[in-house]
Length: 190
Image (cartoon, rainbow, N blue to C red; front, side, top):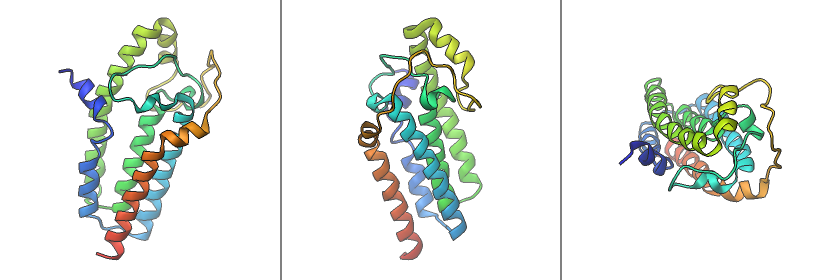
């Protein structure tokens, strides 16, 4: 089995062990909680913006794919805004918990690089085959992880679909509320 497909398929579940460990060993303060929550909100706003342009196809776990090349919205600044949003969500949660700092952030960054390196390689292979020179030009113009200062000139402009994005992000939003509530209970009750 292709390890890239395995990481792609289970990408929603791989952060769970790290979240559980962080919750168990949490030592939050008001400062860490506020800073981490801010990072989490930034990550979710980035994800939400990306989903508004990409649609619910971002939730697929079967195969990497897409019926059109999305180069506007946040994709005009960075090629992987949803994954970058995921990084800030996880990073923010670890800062909120302040468990095993700074080592937990080192583990997250290493694992994130490994997992999303495989996933992005798989997706880029698909996009290159499907969209050819159009994708190659986009890939040369827009970096994977570091945003551009000015948006890529998208060939097709699309309107964000905020309602569909909200429906698609419902599970992510519920998970954010749940892990934050668990941390608050752990911090103030246990």
